[in-house]
Image (cartoon, rainbow, N blue to C red):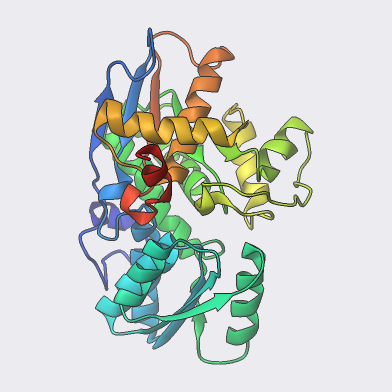
Length: 332
């Protein structure tokens, strides 16, 4: 991804594991009577098996440049694993605060990189409040994937790659699972910068997809609010987007509205259905959060938001090996 260094800070990687330039794979018949072009962006093939490596590479490269020695974040798993891995490569001491309910596979991955793991009881937001409290006023850098502009800058490179992979003819739709919002807002900023440079003619429509168990952004769009009301999250297999109060709410809503996107909240049954279907139809084993977007594509198509001949991109945000619980349930 550092081919786009002139549009990042720092311009060259202080720390890299070979992140970015992930494959773009076309599906011809995922949906019955499919009359649009559907593509999967395989972010699951990044070094720690999720899109979060892009942001972690920029954050840790910047931290290394500044002389940071200790770094921390709160995460349900993927961002924590990415930050732990890049911190290990950079020689930084890393602490990750996770909800006590985070999946076992992600916990093992974080610990394998030598990070200090701190489990926090209660909802996802408790981990965020704890790490803020613990890092305030000391020499630990809070490298928040939900707040850091450097982390978001790494997400811009998804848009840069899509534009280049499509020979600068950008897709019509990008359908994204949304939790904290770094991915969808980063993609928006990436396409926006390319349009300002005159390299592309337009920005795709960006569609945020959430689980009905936790859908503050979709609710705000439907109610025409500038900020979402706090929701009480219910259980969901899509733990990566289980965030009741997204830090980037205003940015997410702005990006969706400017690009004429449509928010969709999908039921758990459809997430589970598409999680299994993607593996069986396409040979792609996603983490459950990735399947949220495909359930959203189905509903966008049925609502007439996706038209014949249009190009649709779905980022496969993480590997199914990150959380095997749903896959195991398919096989029982």
